[in-house]
Length: 244
Image (cartoon, rainbow, N blue to C red; front, side, top):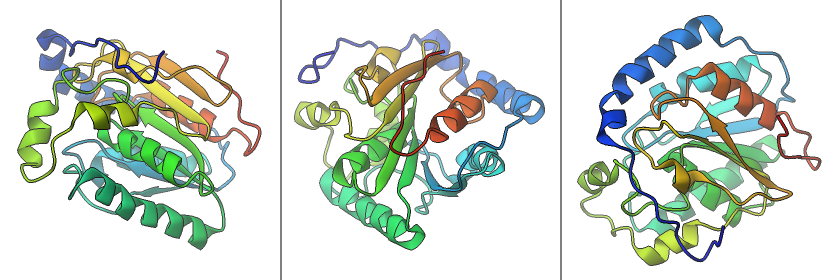
């Protein structure tokens, strides 16, 4: 994929959007019975960023799963994700300071897991502070194409009336892959984000993994949880793309 040009991506059909809440609730219920984890982690810090309009409660099942799997999983610590609280670069400056503090406090590189818009933050932080970031994973994050490619743009504008609008120039800046191991998890049945905008360029340090999930279910789907734990368990300095 040419990182200089956005792929032509349409938003998901309204039929998929309409059933997102029901599918998300079903996935949450299924996770209660099926999300069994193996202890594969090495205890390194993992910070989870929620999606647009979502808060810490939405990422609690994922964080709890990762803690049980042996990681030091924690919330991003900034409450509900209402979008950038100022201009985009100023907002990333604030989050970068958080990453550097987490790194200094733990003495270890930090892995970043971002859901939807939270994944945009995670990717940019991987670019800003690669010496502090061990790995980046995104769940349903449309970094390759955002404008006109999601069903969340109206909500973004509503929550960010005073923020600078997303521009084609900023969209182009978001496409390049961070210089750290990066995994994009996406679903072709996502009802909010056009899945083609979530495809990462395949490389020695990057991959895209398809799952079957709703957008709202990406943080609780048992298959997704196990994939996230598997990728986070890759040895530092010896990360390899998933082959199965």
